Amino acid sequence: MNQTKGGLKGFIQEFWKYRDLLKLMVMKDIKLKYRRSFLGYVWSILNPLMIMVIMTMVFSTMFARNIENFPVYLFCGQLLFNFMNSSTHEAINSVNYNAPLLKKTYVPKYIFTVATVTSSAVDLIFSLGALAIVMLVTRAEFTWYILLAPFVLLQLYLFCVGLGLFLAQANVFFRDTQFIYNAVTTAWMYLTPIFYPLESLPEWLIWVVKHCNPMYFYVGQFRDLVYTGTMPGPVILTAGWAAALGMLLVGAWSFSRNQDKFILYI
Image (cartoon, rainbow, N blue to C red):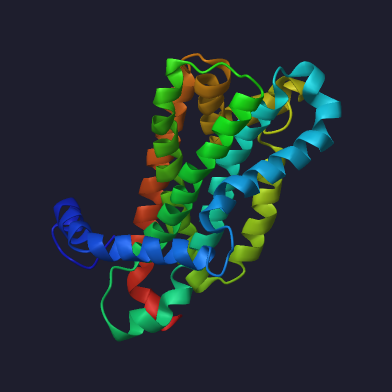
């Protein structure tokens, strides 16, 4: 995924060489998001809280009777899906938006996509404070399993980096990628049990979600650790890591294969 030789070793060396640039780009993205904002980073907590309250009011009458502590159930799914949705949508244009810089000097092209997803991950970490508030208000039980939640977030982060790389390189050549992806994520949201119990779906659709929806792997694991206070099963754990590493490999391979052609299209 670079222009240096040496395979994986060369990539690691280059990535380490540009680590300070990555940090600067992440900090720049975060500052731009909250520039001229009175509340600043507090919006990372307030925004998901406000959305959660609205969605709880809308869907609680339909599903709350079947779901204990519906706000926490909803919030666990909402936080993870919103991170995937926002980070990958921003990653789509990460190469195109930085075309002027790429034309002037050599910078590893993947660094822009990785920085975009990472800045969204920082927002996700801030949003966990909102989840803690909801759990305290609703008197949810805190268990030691919560300490394992970062491993689920790591899986999701790797998945989003891989998906972001794939989308970014595709959008360089086919600008309609971003519009198609909007429709995909809308359907993806409704096929992920965020505000409804999985059991409410038909059996054939439950099978599809459990076997073909990567976000189910991460939302399911996260809910097991935070909402239910149990250890995720080996099947969903294996599926989560396999989806994350598989998507990362696909994204890295496609990006590396096409990055030398970017200059002709951006």
